[in-house]
Image: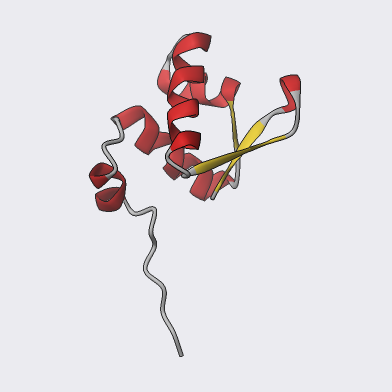
Length: 78
């Protein structure tokens, strides 16, 4: 039997130099399987532009993967 360590554990996320909002988003995706820009803004009380910047960083760091197009984009864990 093989056990896999959760690579998206908070300690690992902090090592990736993520801010608290981004860590909160990864936890949200772990629980809800996806997150949208709107959900990100709501859980972090953030502007649209701020959410877009944070989400793009998570995509660049290969933590989240965007799926869908336009207003239907949501993000999944890599």
